[in-house]
Amino acid sequence: MACPTQAIPGEKQPMDSLVVGPGALGLLFAARLRALGNVTLVGRKSGLQQSQVQWQDGTLSTLVLPQQGPGEALPEPLDLVLVTTKAGDTLQALSLLLPALPQSVPVLLMQNGMGSQQTVARAFPGHCLLAATTTEGANRPAPDRVLHAGHGETCLGPLTPSAASLAPWVAQKLRQAGFYSRTSHPIEQDLWGKLAVNAGINAFTALLDCPNGVLPEQPDFQQRITPLCREIAAVAQAEGVSLQAEALHQQILTVCARTAGNISSMLQDHRAGRSTEIDYINGYIAQCARAHGLAAPVNQALFEGVKQLHS
Ligand SMILES: NC(=O)c1ccc[n+]([C@@H]2O[C@H](COP(=O)([O-])OP(=O)(O)OC[C@H]3O[C@@H](n4cnc5c(N)ncnc54)[C@H](OP(=O)(O)O)[C@@H]3O)[C@@H](O)[C@H]2O)c1
Image (spheres, rainbow, N blue to C red):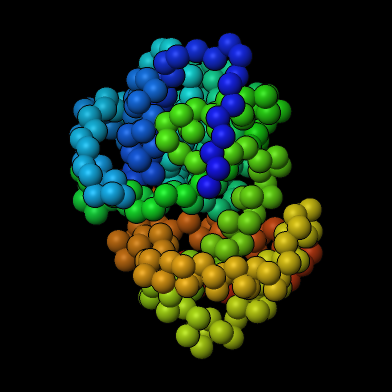
């Protein structure tokens, strides 16, 4: 995959970053951003955070980074803030932090699904907010261990007007850190693309308790996937996003085959007793459908089914 680097006049080195949400994805990005400058973590509590990162080629590196808790004074200078909390935690994580951050510092939101990014943009319209969708894969087999499960691509674009001119710079910095990264405008098209595929896989895996590759054989999936894809395409089109039901159906089957052994994040969350991101996936689509006066019974049923799993 091509990963061009583009020189931007006036850029400075090094780049100091803040990573809010030091979980699987946050620590993966922190481990590489550290090559560009200082990295500080923001978690639920403060202290020194030590983790072993296992890279895809099997090599291990030790990551030791300072971590601060919510509301503590921010380090200076700061060039980039990466937000890697789960969608449902994002607004709360940023509610103390953003008012203390200069509005010119780019803040990259990396949550799956949709809805949380728009909520943050509505709450902080003067900040330089960007959203990303990534196919990098990371998980945490133990609290002090991060596994880079798969290389992917990170696609990012502006959420607020002031972020538009900084998007190429942020993408370039991620490339310098070692991630395939590109800009996209409007980013909503890419967010919807990933949302649609997740909406066709994640809830089914949680309800049927199976890895991605087993889904296409399941009668429940077979019965509901065609009407589900039609609903998603209709809602996307009402939102101004170009998405075809048949192409989506095919893409979902391709992803199931390519990630056959994967346990989706929703199933992992359910098995671990954590709340899932269903509100920001099928729940978001069902909510958009209501706003446009469209029916989305399959999305609504998947949303309610997953909610009942952890009620
Ligand atoms: N992992 C991946 O491969 C991947 C790939 C693409 C997209 N994503 C998306 O990226 C996001 C993060 O995923 P993840 O797998 O990295 O989740 P994760 O491992 O659960 O990490 C989330 C982190 O956020 C922390 N957190 C929660 N509330 C916070 C707050 N108020 N302030 C600061 N930190 C807070 C959590 O701390 P506690 O542990 O104490 O709750 C945890 O360390 C999700 O939206 C996910 O869908 C993940």
